[in-house]
Length: 331
Image (cartoon, rainbow, N blue to C red; front, side, top):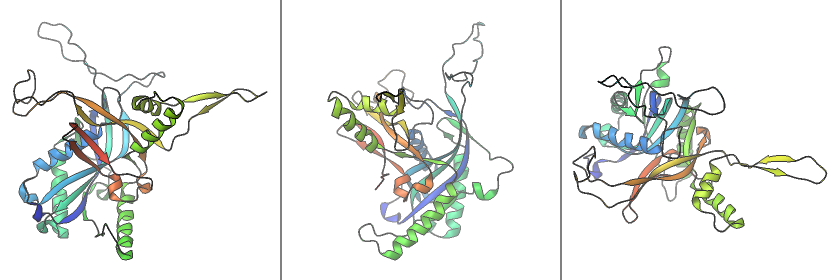
Protein backbone atom coordinates (compact mmCIF):
# COMPACT_ATOMS: atom_id res chain seq x y z
CA UNK A 1 0.00 0.00 0.00
CA UNK A 2 1.57 3.27 -1.12
CA UNK A 3 0.54 5.38 1.87
CA UNK A 4 2.97 7.54 3.80
CA UNK A 5 3.55 6.32 7.33
CA UNK A 6 2.68 9.71 8.80
CA UNK A 7 -0.76 9.52 7.15
CA UNK A 8 -1.70 6.34 9.05
CA UNK A 9 -2.75 7.51 12.51
CA UNK A 10 -5.79 5.64 13.77
CA UNK A 11 -5.76 1.97 14.76
CA UNK A 12 -8.98 0.15 13.95
CA UNK A 13 -10.40 -3.34 13.55
CA UNK A 14 -12.21 -4.57 10.44
CA UNK A 15 -14.63 -7.48 10.86
CA UNK A 16 -16.02 -9.34 7.83
CA UNK A 17 -18.51 -11.73 9.44
CA UNK A 18 -19.97 -15.06 8.35
CA UNK A 19 -18.31 -15.42 4.96
CA UNK A 20 -19.39 -18.58 3.17
CA UNK A 21 -16.60 -20.29 1.21
CA UNK A 22 -17.13 -23.21 -1.14
CA UNK A 23 -14.43 -25.75 -2.03
CA UNK A 24 -11.52 -24.23 -0.12
CA UNK A 25 -8.25 -26.16 -0.07
CA UNK A 26 -8.33 -28.76 2.71
CA UNK A 27 -4.75 -30.01 2.15
CA UNK A 28 -2.92 -27.42 4.22
CA UNK A 29 0.58 -28.93 3.96
CA UNK A 30 2.43 -32.14 3.01
CA UNK A 31 1.71 -33.55 6.49
CA UNK A 32 -1.64 -32.02 7.53
CA UNK A 33 -5.14 -31.68 6.20
CA UNK A 34 -8.36 -30.07 7.40
CA UNK A 35 -8.59 -26.33 7.93
CA UNK A 36 -6.61 -24.22 5.41
CA UNK A 37 -3.14 -23.04 6.43
CA UNK A 38 -2.90 -19.66 8.14
CA UNK A 39 -0.61 -18.54 5.29
CA UNK A 40 -3.64 -18.75 3.00
CA UNK A 41 -5.28 -16.01 5.06
CA UNK A 42 -2.21 -13.80 5.38
CA UNK A 43 -1.87 -14.13 1.60
CA UNK A 44 -5.51 -13.10 1.26
CA UNK A 45 -4.80 -10.06 3.43
CA UNK A 46 -1.93 -8.98 1.16
CA UNK A 47 -3.97 -9.55 -2.00
CA UNK A 48 -6.91 -7.59 -0.57
CA UNK A 49 -4.67 -4.64 0.36
CA UNK A 50 -3.25 -4.60 -3.16
CA UNK A 51 -6.75 -4.46 -4.61
CA UNK A 52 -7.55 -1.36 -2.60
CA UNK A 53 -6.22 1.82 -4.15
CA UNK A 54 -4.25 4.50 -2.33
CA UNK A 55 -7.36 6.61 -1.81
CA UNK A 56 -8.85 3.82 0.38
CA UNK A 57 -6.81 5.21 3.27
CA UNK A 58 -6.30 1.90 5.04
CA UNK A 59 -3.38 -0.48 5.69
CA UNK A 60 -3.83 -4.10 6.82
CA UNK A 61 -1.30 -5.42 9.34
CA UNK A 62 -2.71 -8.68 10.70
CA UNK A 63 -5.61 -11.10 10.44
CA UNK A 64 -7.60 -13.28 12.83
CA UNK A 65 -9.73 -16.25 11.77
CA UNK A 66 -12.90 -17.55 13.40
CA UNK A 67 -14.54 -20.69 12.02
CA UNK A 68 -18.33 -21.06 12.36
CA UNK A 69 -18.83 -23.98 9.98
CA UNK A 70 -16.60 -26.75 8.61
CA UNK A 71 -17.79 -29.36 6.12
CA UNK A 72 -14.96 -31.47 4.71
CA UNK A 73 -15.75 -33.11 1.37
CA UNK A 74 -14.81 -36.63 2.42
CA UNK A 75 -16.46 -40.04 2.48
CA UNK A 76 -18.40 -40.87 5.64
CA UNK A 77 -18.53 -44.68 5.49
CA UNK A 78 -16.22 -46.52 7.84
CA UNK A 79 -13.41 -45.28 10.06
CA UNK A 80 -11.04 -44.27 7.25
CA UNK A 81 -11.83 -41.05 5.39
CA UNK A 82 -11.07 -40.35 1.71
CA UNK A 83 -11.50 -37.13 -0.27
CA UNK A 84 -14.39 -36.89 -2.71
CA UNK A 85 -12.60 -36.40 -6.02
CA UNK A 86 -13.91 -35.01 -9.29
CA UNK A 87 -13.79 -36.87 -12.58
CA UNK A 88 -11.88 -34.85 -15.16
CA UNK A 89 -13.11 -34.70 -18.80
CA UNK A 90 -11.72 -37.23 -21.28
CA UNK A 91 -8.66 -36.33 -23.28
CA UNK A 92 -8.89 -35.39 -26.96
CA UNK A 93 -8.02 -38.98 -27.93
CA UNK A 94 -10.78 -40.39 -25.72
CA UNK A 95 -8.50 -41.67 -22.94
CA UNK A 96 -9.36 -41.17 -19.27
CA UNK A 97 -7.58 -38.21 -17.73
CA UNK A 98 -5.51 -38.81 -14.61
CA UNK A 99 -7.12 -38.06 -11.26
CA UNK A 100 -5.22 -35.53 -9.17
CA UNK A 101 -6.10 -35.74 -5.49
CA UNK A 102 -7.67 -32.48 -4.31
CA UNK A 103 -9.00 -31.93 -0.81
CA UNK A 104 -11.97 -29.59 -0.51
CA UNK A 105 -13.92 -28.13 2.37
CA UNK A 106 -16.90 -25.80 2.71
CA UNK A 107 -16.38 -23.11 5.35
CA UNK A 108 -18.18 -20.34 7.15
CA UNK A 109 -15.68 -17.81 8.46
CA UNK A 110 -15.36 -14.47 10.16
CA UNK A 111 -12.18 -12.55 9.32
CA UNK A 112 -10.85 -9.92 11.73
CA UNK A 113 -8.22 -7.50 10.41
CA UNK A 114 -5.94 -5.28 12.49
CA UNK A 115 -5.78 -2.08 10.42
CA UNK A 116 -4.63 1.54 10.53
CA UNK A 117 -6.63 4.39 9.01
CA UNK A 118 -5.86 7.88 7.78
CA UNK A 119 -7.66 10.98 9.06
CA UNK A 120 -9.93 10.89 6.01
CA UNK A 121 -11.40 7.52 7.10
CA UNK A 122 -11.86 8.26 10.79
CA UNK A 123 -15.50 9.38 10.65
CA UNK A 124 -18.32 6.92 11.25
CA UNK A 125 -19.88 7.35 7.80
CA UNK A 126 -16.51 7.05 6.08
CA UNK A 127 -15.71 3.87 8.01
CA UNK A 128 -19.06 2.30 7.17
CA UNK A 129 -18.60 3.06 3.46
CA UNK A 130 -15.05 1.70 3.47
CA UNK A 131 -16.09 -1.52 5.25
CA UNK A 132 -18.83 -2.06 2.67
CA UNK A 133 -16.34 -1.46 -0.15
CA UNK A 134 -13.86 -3.97 1.27
CA UNK A 135 -16.58 -6.60 1.72
CA UNK A 136 -17.55 -6.07 -1.93
CA UNK A 137 -13.93 -6.53 -3.03
CA UNK A 138 -13.60 -9.73 -0.97
CA UNK A 139 -16.74 -11.18 -2.56
CA UNK A 140 -14.88 -11.39 -5.88
CA UNK A 141 -11.75 -13.02 -4.48
CA UNK A 142 -10.65 -16.53 -3.57
CA UNK A 143 -10.17 -17.58 0.05
CA UNK A 144 -7.74 -20.50 0.39
CA UNK A 145 -8.60 -21.42 -3.20
CA UNK A 146 -12.33 -21.48 -2.47
CA UNK A 147 -15.10 -19.33 -3.91
CA UNK A 148 -16.97 -16.78 -1.81
CA UNK A 149 -20.68 -17.41 -2.19
CA UNK A 150 -23.67 -15.22 -1.21
CA UNK A 151 -25.23 -15.54 2.25
CA UNK A 152 -28.28 -17.70 2.75
CA UNK A 153 -31.59 -16.00 1.89
CA UNK A 154 -32.88 -16.10 5.48
CA UNK A 155 -29.73 -14.53 6.96
CA UNK A 156 -30.45 -11.26 8.75
CA UNK A 157 -28.43 -8.21 7.73
CA UNK A 158 -26.90 -7.68 11.18
CA UNK A 159 -25.09 -11.02 11.00
CA UNK A 160 -23.33 -10.26 7.71
CA UNK A 161 -22.79 -6.50 7.96
CA UNK A 162 -19.07 -5.62 7.85
CA UNK A 163 -17.75 -3.64 10.79
CA UNK A 164 -14.91 -1.10 10.90
CA UNK A 165 -14.39 0.31 14.39
CA UNK A 166 -11.66 2.40 15.98
CA UNK A 167 -9.71 0.66 18.73
CA UNK A 168 -9.95 2.59 22.03
CA UNK A 169 -6.74 4.33 23.05
CA UNK A 170 -4.64 2.25 25.41
CA UNK A 171 -1.25 3.42 26.61
CA UNK A 172 0.96 0.35 26.23
CA UNK A 173 3.35 1.32 29.03
CA UNK A 174 1.07 2.73 31.73
CA UNK A 175 -2.61 2.51 30.76
CA UNK A 176 -4.88 4.21 33.28
CA UNK A 177 -7.94 2.59 34.81
CA UNK A 178 -10.44 4.33 32.53
CA UNK A 179 -8.54 3.31 29.39
CA UNK A 180 -8.49 -0.32 30.52
CA UNK A 181 -12.19 -0.27 31.34
CA UNK A 182 -13.14 1.32 27.99
CA UNK A 183 -11.00 -1.18 26.09
CA UNK A 184 -12.44 -4.18 27.91
CA UNK A 185 -16.01 -2.99 27.34
CA UNK A 186 -15.32 -2.42 23.65
CA UNK A 187 -13.59 -5.80 23.29
CA UNK A 188 -16.37 -7.75 24.99
CA UNK A 189 -18.96 -6.11 22.75
CA UNK A 190 -16.92 -6.95 19.66
CA UNK A 191 -16.00 -10.51 20.61
CA UNK A 192 -19.56 -11.55 21.44
CA UNK A 193 -20.48 -10.79 17.83
CA UNK A 194 -18.16 -13.61 16.79
CA UNK A 195 -20.04 -16.31 18.73
CA UNK A 196 -20.69 -19.15 18.25
CA UNK A 197 -17.42 -20.18 16.65
CA UNK A 198 -13.80 -21.13 17.26
CA UNK A 199 -10.72 -18.94 16.83
CA UNK A 200 -7.34 -20.35 15.84
CA UNK A 201 -4.43 -19.21 18.02
CA UNK A 202 -0.78 -20.22 18.25
CA UNK A 203 0.41 -22.55 21.01
CA UNK A 204 4.17 -22.70 20.47
CA UNK A 205 4.44 -22.88 24.27
CA UNK A 206 2.60 -26.21 24.33
CA UNK A 207 5.02 -27.65 21.78
CA UNK A 208 8.06 -26.53 23.80
CA UNK A 209 6.55 -27.87 27.01
CA UNK A 210 5.87 -31.28 25.45
CA UNK A 211 9.42 -31.37 24.04
CA UNK A 212 10.89 -30.72 27.50
CA UNK A 213 8.62 -33.38 29.00
CA UNK A 214 9.68 -36.03 26.47
CA UNK A 215 13.37 -35.13 26.67
CA UNK A 216 13.28 -35.62 30.44
CA UNK A 217 12.83 -39.34 29.75
CA UNK A 218 14.72 -39.53 26.45
CA UNK A 219 17.29 -36.81 25.58
CA UNK A 220 17.35 -37.88 21.91
CA UNK A 221 13.74 -36.77 21.31
CA UNK A 222 13.48 -34.03 18.65
CA UNK A 223 10.96 -31.24 18.07
CA UNK A 224 9.42 -33.37 15.31
CA UNK A 225 8.81 -36.17 17.82
CA UNK A 226 7.06 -33.72 20.16
CA UNK A 227 4.98 -32.33 17.27
CA UNK A 228 3.90 -35.82 16.20
CA UNK A 229 3.11 -36.68 19.82
CA UNK A 230 0.74 -33.69 20.01
CA UNK A 231 -0.81 -34.62 16.65
CA UNK A 232 -2.43 -37.79 17.97
CA UNK A 233 -4.23 -39.22 20.97
CA UNK A 234 -1.85 -41.19 23.18
CA UNK A 235 -3.12 -43.90 25.52
CA UNK A 236 -1.21 -46.11 27.91
CA UNK A 237 -2.22 -49.02 30.09
CA UNK A 238 -2.11 -48.63 33.82
CA UNK A 239 -1.65 -51.93 35.69
CA UNK A 240 -2.56 -51.52 39.37
CA UNK A 241 -2.06 -54.60 41.52
CA UNK A 242 -4.97 -57.05 41.63
CA UNK A 243 -7.11 -54.83 39.40
CA UNK A 244 -8.09 -54.88 35.71
CA UNK A 245 -5.96 -52.99 33.22
CA UNK A 246 -7.11 -49.38 32.84
CA UNK A 247 -6.31 -47.39 29.69
CA UNK A 248 -5.52 -43.72 30.30
CA UNK A 249 -5.41 -41.03 27.59
CA UNK A 250 -2.98 -38.14 27.86
CA UNK A 251 -4.60 -34.90 28.95
CA UNK A 252 -4.51 -31.86 26.66
CA UNK A 253 -4.70 -28.19 27.57
CA UNK A 254 -7.39 -27.67 24.93
CA UNK A 255 -8.32 -28.45 21.33
CA UNK A 256 -4.72 -28.74 20.10
CA UNK A 257 -4.05 -29.25 16.38
CA UNK A 258 -0.92 -29.48 14.20
CA UNK A 259 -0.69 -26.52 11.82
CA UNK A 260 1.68 -25.16 9.15
CA UNK A 261 2.82 -21.62 9.98
CA UNK A 262 5.16 -20.65 7.15
CA UNK A 263 8.05 -21.63 4.90
CA UNK A 264 11.81 -22.10 5.22
CA UNK A 265 14.19 -21.67 2.30
CA UNK A 266 15.80 -24.76 0.72
CA UNK A 267 17.78 -22.91 -1.94
CA UNK A 268 19.27 -19.57 -2.78
CA UNK A 269 17.16 -16.89 -4.41
CA UNK A 270 17.08 -17.43 -8.18
CA UNK A 271 16.74 -14.58 -10.65
CA UNK A 272 13.35 -14.11 -12.36
CA UNK A 273 12.79 -16.45 -15.29
CA UNK A 274 15.79 -18.71 -14.56
CA UNK A 275 13.79 -21.60 -13.07
CA UNK A 276 12.02 -23.68 -15.68
CA UNK A 277 8.33 -24.20 -15.07
CA UNK A 278 7.86 -21.30 -12.63
CA UNK A 279 4.47 -19.65 -13.13
CA UNK A 280 5.78 -16.13 -12.47
CA UNK A 281 8.75 -15.17 -14.64
CA UNK A 282 9.03 -11.63 -13.22
CA UNK A 283 9.56 -12.46 -9.53
CA UNK A 284 12.67 -14.01 -7.90
CA UNK A 285 12.21 -17.71 -7.18
CA UNK A 286 13.22 -19.92 -4.25
CA UNK A 287 12.49 -23.51 -3.25
CA UNK A 288 10.99 -23.82 0.25
CA UNK A 289 9.63 -26.36 2.73
CA UNK A 290 6.83 -26.02 5.26
CA UNK A 291 7.39 -24.84 8.84
CA UNK A 292 5.12 -26.53 11.41
CA UNK A 293 3.86 -25.70 14.87
CA UNK A 294 0.72 -26.37 16.93
CA UNK A 295 -2.38 -24.26 17.36
CA UNK A 296 -5.47 -24.31 19.50
CA UNK A 297 -9.11 -23.81 18.58
CA UNK A 298 -10.84 -21.87 21.33
CA UNK A 299 -14.05 -19.95 21.83
CA UNK A 300 -13.52 -16.23 21.10
CA UNK A 301 -14.93 -15.21 24.49
CA UNK A 302 -11.80 -16.67 26.12
CA UNK A 303 -9.55 -14.28 24.20
CA UNK A 304 -8.73 -11.19 26.26
CA UNK A 305 -7.39 -8.72 23.70
CA UNK A 306 -7.05 -8.08 19.97
CA UNK A 307 -3.36 -9.03 19.79
CA UNK A 308 -4.16 -12.54 21.05
CA UNK A 309 -6.43 -13.14 18.04
CA UNK A 310 -4.35 -11.56 15.27
CA UNK A 311 -1.74 -13.37 13.14
CA UNK A 312 1.10 -11.31 11.64
CA UNK A 313 3.87 -12.22 9.21
CA UNK A 314 7.63 -11.91 9.58
CA UNK A 315 10.60 -12.70 7.36
CA UNK A 316 13.92 -13.62 8.98
CA UNK A 317 16.54 -12.46 6.49
CA UNK A 318 19.35 -14.37 8.24
CA UNK A 319 17.61 -17.76 8.40
CA UNK A 320 15.45 -17.13 5.29
CA UNK A 321 12.29 -18.15 7.12
CA UNK A 322 8.88 -16.68 6.32
CA UNK A 323 6.63 -17.33 9.30
CA UNK A 324 3.29 -16.32 10.77
CA UNK A 325 3.16 -15.37 14.45
CA UNK A 326 0.33 -15.01 16.94
CA UNK A 327 0.76 -13.32 20.33
CA UNK A 328 -1.72 -15.46 22.28
CA UNK A 329 -0.66 -16.20 25.83
CA UNK A 330 -2.39 -17.85 28.78
CA UNK A 331 -1.00 -15.25 31.22
